[in-house]
Amino acid sequence: MKAMQARVRKLLEENKIDGFIGLKMEHGHPAPFMFSRENLGEMETLVVGDVRYPLNKALLKVSGQYPDLTFGVMVRGCDERGITELLKWNQLHRDRVIPVGVACSSELAQLCECYKPYPSDWVVGEKTEGIAKSKRLQKIEGMNQKERLSYWLNQFNKCIKCYGCRDVCPMCFCEVCSLEDRNFILTGKLPPENPTFHLSRAVHMVGRCIDCGLCEEACPSNIPVRTLYKKINEIVKEYFDYRTGESSEGKSPLNLLGEVTLELSDVNK
Amino acid sequence: MAKEAQSVPGFEPKIIAFLCNWCSYGGADLAGVSRLQYPANTRTIRVMCTATISPHHILKAFQKGADGVLVAGCHIGDCHYIKGNYMTIKRVAVLKELLRFTGFQEERLYLDWISSAEGVRFAEVIRNFTQKVKEMGPSHLRTTY
Ligand code: SF4
Ligand code: SF4
Ligand code: FES
Image (cartoon, rainbow over all chains, first blue to last red; front, side, top):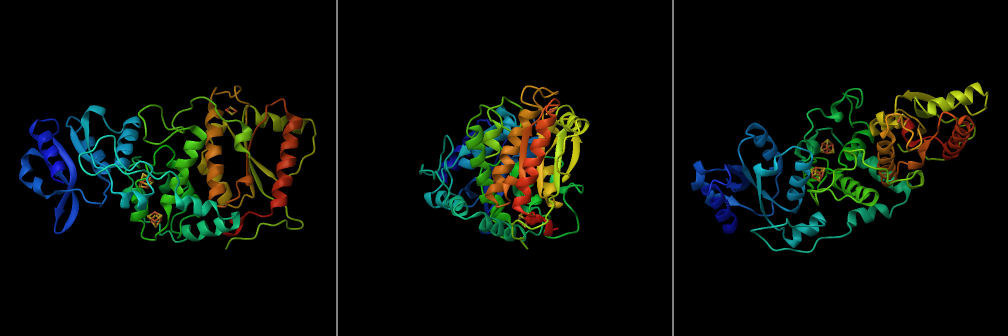
């Protein structure tokens, strides 16, 4: 915590950044806050903790409004993947963002089943091993087709279409959302079309989801949407050898035509 | 809510066929003018290129009760927009895996390349796919919405 405070203070004092998006302890709760040269006195209240918040989403908003300013932002492994991907999707400017890293605790890494629970560089925490294969995925893959169907139909039927999963997602930046297209998703009906609503969101997460898990935390109906997107990430890796947010090379496979690496026999298995 | 998938006697599946204008629709046309016989279970939707078919359209077709969805376009290298079908195969691959994971029977979605000279093959593809979907029985989603 102290190390993070010192780093942020230094970045601000040396004019490397104009503001830092981090968490501030307020009324006993960590909440997002913009630390700046004007409020250096608040630095003591900067916290890290195991709480998570879509800080990148706040970053997208302010950097869009102040394109000439440079912002620092607290990043965990997932948030750093997010920045990498947002740069590729042209949502941020490379020289306008300075991430300050946090390595996640092993408890958090286990909970998330995160494959890389640390960013490339960090000032707080210690590196812990990532989890290679998600147990949540294994559980569902172990079911037969009928079990999988009734599992997901029941889960999706709990949806109250609050859009919380989308609104919290740091990788959802489109101005027009297909999930609000009236020709596509019926309005005035709950649950939303099952499975079209959920599978469409899943398809949209190809090359975008950085597995932060915020969607699932936000969902008031406890739908395991993160598991669905974990599957998307696995599909993207298996079919296109692409790991979302891992490298600044390449682009999301559904974002460019690219070359053909698949055959019909890979598809119609 | 989930209806049992089983072969129902006398069941006639509803199949939506998305055909690209330049190749597969031509193939269908050729099959027609050649008076080739094939089952009449498909409703064709002609699109300019298979790349204009979003996973949304496919999902919506299933949601509206299609028992099967066929996507057919030009062979790789023959797409009239050069690389449109490069995107199609990627999208269908992802969607099929996702349908498999969620138990929605990915076999109900089928991708093929059929050129405008392949009238005989067009009829064959329709015959085979219709037969397959018939054996699978009505889609689970028929009753959902
Ligand atoms: S885990 Fe959920 S909130 Fe996070 S990037 Fe993926 S879809 Fe968005
Ligand atoms: S947060 Fe949960 S209930 Fe709300 S729209 Fe997303 S999946 Fe549905
Ligand atoms: S024009 Fe036929 S697939 Fe593109």
